[in-house]
Length: 142
Image 1 (tube, rainbow, N blue to C red):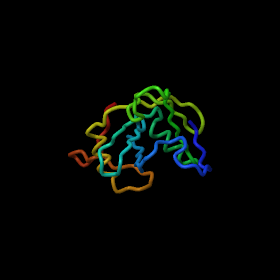
Image 2: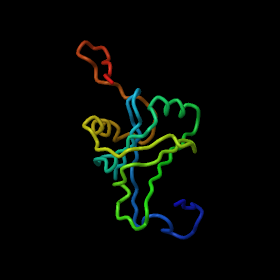
Image 3: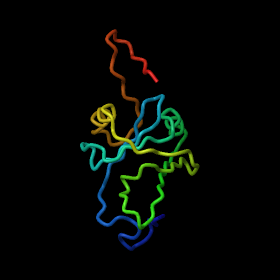
Image 4: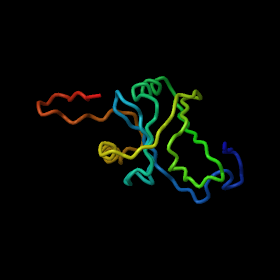
């Protein structure tokens, strides 16, 4: 349901008593982007979605200018499923349908990334991989 940001009526079209949340986009350079939603940067993610866009493609698009990612799920008012329990979301990037986002459980690697990024408030960077014993970068197996 689209909600106008220019209305004077409070609580129209959104959840009453909502709170501020933190969303983090992350992913390995040659894999898909993930979105983690947390109550605050130090909490475990309450929702992790694997998006249908490759990390490299997202970085490329961001280099060209503004990128808008929109996620939609089909909910009927009669359903009792919480929004964070929705398993599949339709994903749009800059107004074009680009596939789906799928809910999944956070992995140990995801939690390490969240711990590394908890102090970052904004930015677009690549985190270094762990150094291999020989001091060379490890290659990631697909």
